Length: 152
Image (cartoon, rainbow, N blue to C red):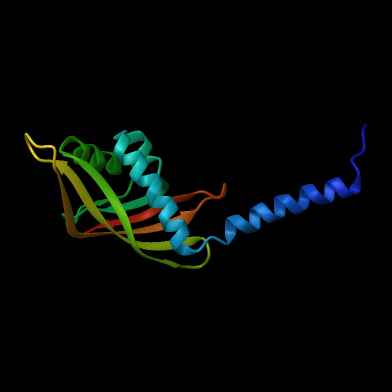
């Protein structure tokens, strides 16, 4: 069995520890921006399975009409209905983010929509007054998923 020099082992462990530390030192704003960017990417593709995968297994979604979805099938139905009537490009934008207990980030975002005018090269930009609140939870693998999402 080949032996690795102790210095090399030390460098490997230091590198791994540094990666773990870096992963845990992101500010709440950085976590929110990165997670919302992933949401924007997945929503633009319009694949419901990918959207549902952004939620934790025990996620809860509170729709604008007050309906509460507490399981993946209900969350899937919400997104399926939303995507079927979608026009243009939806985009979430982070307004604020705060840390809660280290493994939780609470965010407030707004939803905007870009649509092309009929028979025009112009693009209209809609900015909705509605807000989207998210509770992001860090997963065992270091990724972040949505545990609670409230649409206003």
